Image 1 (tube, each protein chain N blue to C red):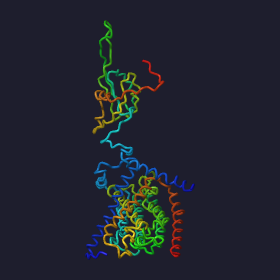
Image 2 (tube, rainbow over the protein chains, first blue to last red):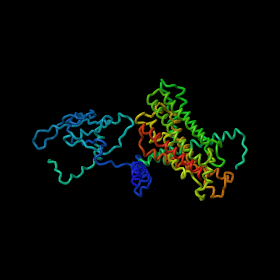
Image 3 (spheres, rainbow over the protein chains, first blue to last red):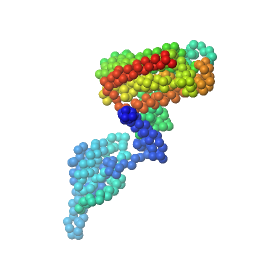
Image 4 (cartoon, each protein chain N blue to C red):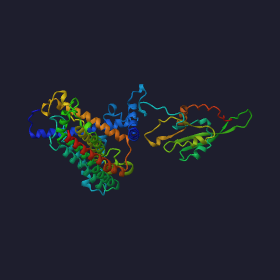
Length: 171
Length: 348
């Protein structure tokens, strides 16, 4: 029997794998079957929470410090800003100088989704969103401005709970 | 027997139409059922789903796409030969189907040396493949064509030798006679199943199916078109409808070879004659001409499912392993099979 078993391991196992996969795929969904793929336009896949779909911008946090634009390997982030005077925090104080964002564009035709801008941002203004349906018919339309990037903030999921025992970041 | 008197031109027309259907219908069905669907299911995906219900019209979309493409020839190619090569490959498939019997009277030609002719004609495709590789003026094509020639010649031999066992047992080279012998036969005096040569010639069947797999250049014997080594072998330079003809020829030949295999080993169009009390070919009722082709198609699909299942399961062999397997394993085994068959034929 050892001989037959060896031959089965050599030649039979591969064919058993393909046959099992076939049966599993053809089996109705109710019985736990179905394909591993998703018929995309008809049904949508829920991407994992940390999927790198698109980069969203929280405009209020941005100080136009340019760190993201400078660290971007593709130079696909365009930032323009100007200084504005804001009312002082305490009565009688001097008016504060704040950076106001005029333009924050990301050219998704150039972006390679490395996420360095998200990592490098010291003010938590950039976030990964799992949103992925933003293809365009013209390549120039992939340049998205800060309003559009701000809209994507709604799709950014809540940060997951820290693991038990993890050190909390001190504010 | 059916007695219909048709003028010669009408008979010829019917034969041409019937031959076209008998080649193209199995080819299309095999591509859709096995290449598109079974392969997808084995890879845990659904395959084409958009064109028609369950993607059943996908084939027409593919054919339409290929027909629209430009017919490109390489500058240094031997243009005329380059253009005819795929047709030669396809013609050999059409010539093959001419001797396959689909029923007691439903055949294109009732040829006494049928299986001899079939094996001879199946080698014509080698010529087409070789000149396709040679005339493309491309190193990959040339290598693919040479590999194909070496492989098809090497595996022709075990195929012929496996068939000889069947011919000895049936005592005839006529494919229709081989069908009758199997269905009118009996095993140890019991005729409930006839005598399909699958059982008595099992070694021959295995050798034949392996050789068929290699003749059709299906994986694990797909070195001639090994895409990771040779781009696409002898098909590299072909585009548009000439590639389509190669593609059709490949799968039409799967259909025809499995038809021949079902005739040789599974009893062809017949059902065991004892079920209806038939004694010989003349007793067979006329309705078998309708049911016979359906039985043939069922057996053909079962066998081509086997071919495709193997194709989708095994990785490609190395070129030297391929040659060694043919010459050192298959040919000795089939020669021994012939000797044993011949001895038993004389003894019983």
